[in-house]
Amino acid sequence: MAQVEPIKAFNDNYIWAICSQHEQQTWVVDPGQSQPVLTFLKANNRRLSGILITHHHWDHTDGVAELLLQFPDIPVYGPKDSKFSGITHPLSHNDNVTIAGITFKVVETPGHTLDHICYTNEQITFTGDTLFSGGCGRLFEGTAEQMWHSLESLKQLPDTCQIYCTHEYTLANLAFAQAVEPENQVLSDYIAWCHQQREKDLPTLPTNMEKERHINPFLRADQAHILAHLPTDLQGLSDQHWQSFAKLRLWKDNF
Image (cartoon, rainbow, N blue to C red; front, side):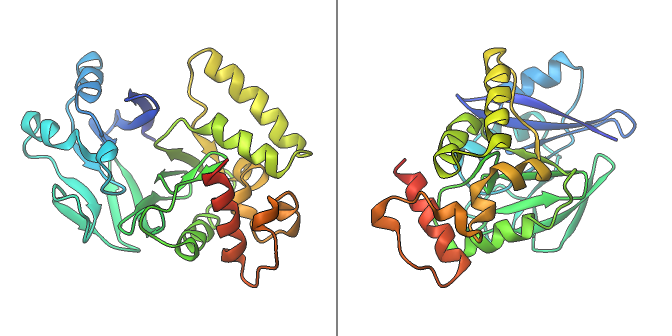
């Protein structure tokens, strides 16, 4: 099994490095910067084998061009019809891609952007800016209904699946989650653990689906108690689960 290592970028991004000793391959996910990747490769005496892209935003793609100058023949996998023009191997929903000895199924997850995809299998999944620990991405291009269905797709992953998202947003997300569910003891315990991690300058990631099912309000917008503490201006009946999700997302946007 390959190892997944975090490479810090910008203020709160992680570029995930997938390193297979057996296959002698190293792939990176969403390299918004090139220099941290090059430093990681040099420190570990490795060459870059390829790149996975989840969506077109600059903080996930700006490092690609420089990496291709250093490693000109490597493939760049990413969503078809993306605004990012550097993809050499476009992917669609339900496509399979095998890298570093690991096979991923591609799941289209529009919401944060229209081109967003996730790389999924039952052990590890790269969720980009769709699913965070305790949260989900802002709706820059897609609709609340699209994002709700995207999260519903990811909820089908096994409890033990390790979730690798691209940002260290966990504590901010959990502050909101606690406003939604102030009596959630699992959430309170998780917040304490995350504080310990960050005080040591360690990632709070990966998370896993079992944890997210207990602490992430955006995965449970279909449960009535999740809306109990909505601000007054967002209260009212919701006919569809995605409408409840939309209210949560609006609350978080202004939290």
